[in-house]
Length: 126
Image 1 (cartoon, one colour):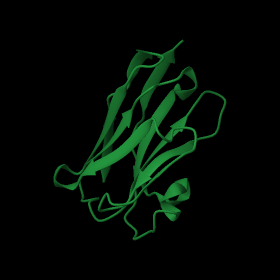
Image 2 (tube, rainbow, N blue to C red; image 1 turned 45 degrees about the horizontal axis):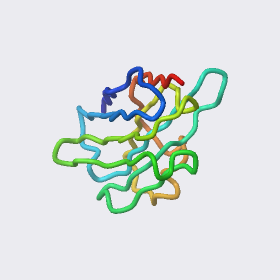
Image 3 (tube, rainbow, N blue to C red; image 1 turned 135 degrees about the horizontal axis):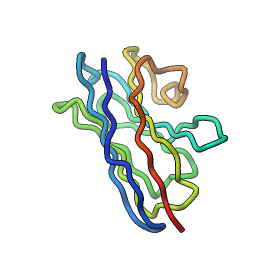
Image 4 (tube, rainbow, N blue to C red; image 1 turned 180 degrees about the vertical axis):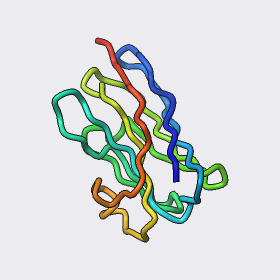
């Protein structure tokens, strides 16, 4: 499975971006997917995760109410809508996919994922 993330860029504080992650070479529609981010000098952290059906999701406290994760299984694609962006959201954002049947609580962990995208840079200026 290959994951291609896109949609990053430079935006002013308060602005919005929509990240996309398209999967190819296999189907991920039956498994949860996640978005992680890593800022310079910091560890990678979970941003959001979504169940295979899209019916259940998880968002980190730092982005709750601002970011929304969704997916389109027909397109093998997961999205991260980011609103009200803050400078502290600046990071490289990675999407990840697993091929294991996991509950959403386990999908919060980066060790749950088998495949990772290349990352897309998000920079929020103040």
